[in-house]
Image (cartoon, rainbow, N blue to C red):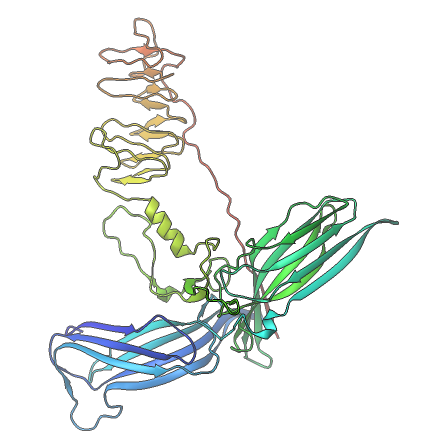
Length: 545
């Protein structure tokens, strides 16, 4: 509305625990007086599960909701106004509000494609005879109180197994595995304390393999029995060194099994979903595959381990979930701010996220980077410029050093590229695009139909510069092993020959030797390097009961 200049919801902080006092303010900046019936504030916590199932050949959507918090108050006006509607004078207005969160266990904020747990403040400005403006502010609930110091989590767990390998009727030496888990609850950022003793009396090499797996189960109470959906993701994996036949090996996890940032364990708190974790310990035979399986339940807590009678207490921080487990794989479209093209050069701007839940963690340099952290690092390494010098100015252009990237009027320079605008110099593995023209990886270039091949060879209107060659138009310089042909004249007779590190000023048509050929394209158009990234695809199982 034209007479409301600013409408904002501000909270004292962004994350809360169960039982805390939630305080905030509603900000209204108006430019004129207007009738205002009431300002209503609602705090709500809701779990929502939804997915599609196939029933009798038809694809249907099943969904269910569960509410944990639902409280409301009126911070201006009356719920049921009587008589004349009051008038709100123009100017800046601040309306404070407060809610007491319930003491009972609240599930943590959670985002996934199949189910969400969200907490938010909703404000409605009730204006008579008009559509009431509404605003929503999401905040994070850390989750149920799970303390690593509880007695049930401090008890160590021990597992032991022994297996004798057989080949047909011949019995070989046994393989034994003994493991001890110091405690079963950990906060994100802590290292899992596991010790293993392997005795390999067989005739083949074996390896110790550890895998922490996240299990998420969704439930919807619809119909007679309802439907369910199970998803699992590997959180972290570790494979030890080979244990030679007839030897013994001891393993101590120390700092090798750092728990990444992810949602805490949720069991019995929400009826629509539950989250739990299992540490799988296996012995892998070089010939027979996996053998000797042990599974340990792992609890992801919200209160870290403390050393008794110590003045040093762990430093608690909050961070977003890693992007390979449930809770970090999905971002709701309502939290993604749409991008509007403003005529700039940035073709892939960083996504603006309005909200993402955070979880308790202990600072650890071995924690994997979140998408936001990786985006910030990428932004630090990449600079998008327009008519701006980069590094050392060379002839009105710029130089981009190692790992630099540059965009000039639609041009792009890849890793390790160097450029001078009026005297173009393409460094090793440089990529360049001029007026829509592309120079691929490893220094291949096409300018107005002109091609520079792999490893820095160039052809301009039929002219060729060989490997590692450099060229200046009005005063042509051919570097080491450079070859050049102007106007595609193949003859080398009557021309000057420039050897190593030679230079040439072109006033007539010449062919320059040094092993180069006259005219034509040299090398491949572009070299591309592919990178392989291991992605963890969720194994989904949907059942209808």
